Image (cartoon, rainbow, N blue to C red; front, side, top):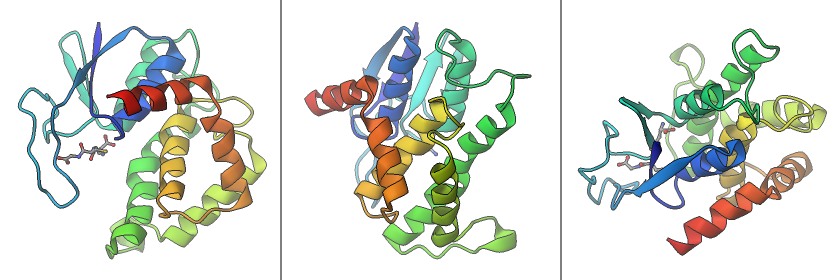
Length: 200
Ligand SMILES: N[C@@H](CCC(=O)N[C@@H](CS)C(=O)NCC(=O)O)C(=O)O
């Protein structure tokens, strides 16, 4: 049985949404505490994540952390709903690119805006928020979902993150992004995750 270490209204909520969409069996272990943005608070010693963060996932003898890695692990393992292309299938490369894009490019760009962090662009690795916004708007103006016509785990991991960043004014709302987020958040599994998180 898969165990998800979860704290409501955090990045682990996306994994609940994904597990539901995949119709995968799992159990939740609620992590009692995580540190806040200012470093205050404590790490729950029962959380197997090496930094005491969420999400963390355990399956058999394996502990998986980093949201993108967890999403890839799950979509490779649970193939009934085909929420991510398998190795050798079309769009596998695009799929991997987007899963890495969220933590590697999109999050740093929009966090920079929210928290006034000054990243170093170009050769140092990061991209400016305006450039990221332009890229996302351009892509989603031509595609219903990140991978084209079909909903995939990218819409949970990148789309769900984008939805959060629009709500918290880290990204600028445009008609394209607003319509896209309305499309993905209308899904029953998203609604169930939100209701479940609100109860805990
Ligand atoms: N890059 C990680 C980030 C995980 C992360 O920072 N999670 C936050 C909650 S959204 C957390 O647990 N923070 C508490 C801490 O850092 O102690 C991922 O995508 O999984």
